[in-house]
Length: 162
Image (cartoon, rainbow, N blue to C red; front, top):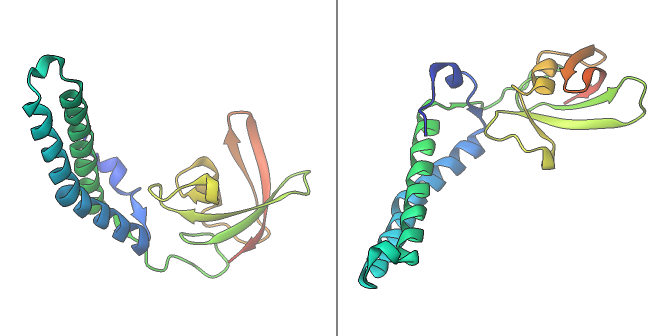
């Protein structure tokens, strides 16, 4: 896995809650998970011929994936900036909830602006570096803005910022 580059560093922004989750996952992987994998490898080795041992290969693959995740988490923890209270009154910023309405549509959409590591559209958490998130940053209630999508330019109005 490639290391994080300096251009990525400014974009790694998370809440304290997400940072704590990453630290907890890292600790669990380094202690509990590594121990489980070592035991699985030892058992698989005891079965004999390693060249045709599916259990051994599976354990090695799991070990590689776990080590890759540990490395990524270590870099994230090292470079992540924690946003404690990014909200600015009536202005879209980190942790803001923003309601927008597409031009010529009655439908409203509400999103929470978060760092890229926390983004999850299933729960309407929008990354500040996504096209829509970047277009929203710094805007206020009533502002009309346009941003580029794969289907062309889209125009929205900000209905509410909390």
